[in-house]
Image 1: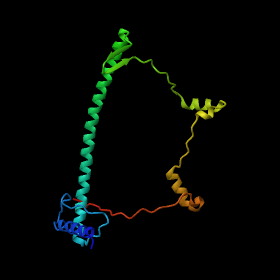
Image 2 (image 1 turned 45 degrees about the vertical axis):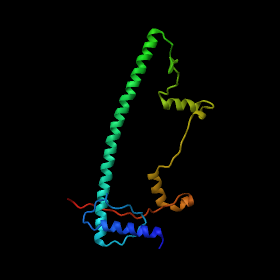
Image 3 (image 1 turned 90 degrees about the vertical axis):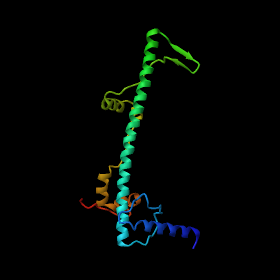
Image 4 (image 1 turned 30 degrees about the vertical axis):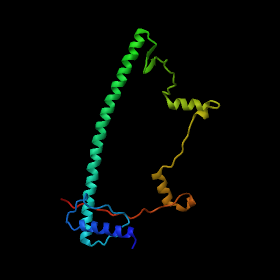
Length: 183
């Protein structure tokens, strides 16, 4: 037996020892690799599933906490961005009002830039028809074809041979479904 095998066997035994408790704490279960083939019995398997449900509930709580924290951070960031934007606008308005074109400071130089022009499409359908009517206008039109998956699935299921090796059906790995009992 290699040192790695001995370590793996010891970890498996520690894991099974923790499953002796009828309601094992997921935090107390030692790390174990996914390919482990534990010597489970029906009772220890149900205990492991109980720990699985608790761990999944913990993950959900952590996701909620993360979302709450992210919302708090987003609010703080939005407030800071608004302050910076407001302060920038105050200085810009002052510079425009006083005719100041440039401010110099050892840490920065600020100047008023001219506004940039851009073209805004107000009626896309009309612009598209005009472009199609113009010689060379097609260059300004982008057409992107894509497969509508739900429609394609029905067609493929009806005539799979029509697509040769361009499409095929795959079956995913079986998964373990756990349905909680009504409390």
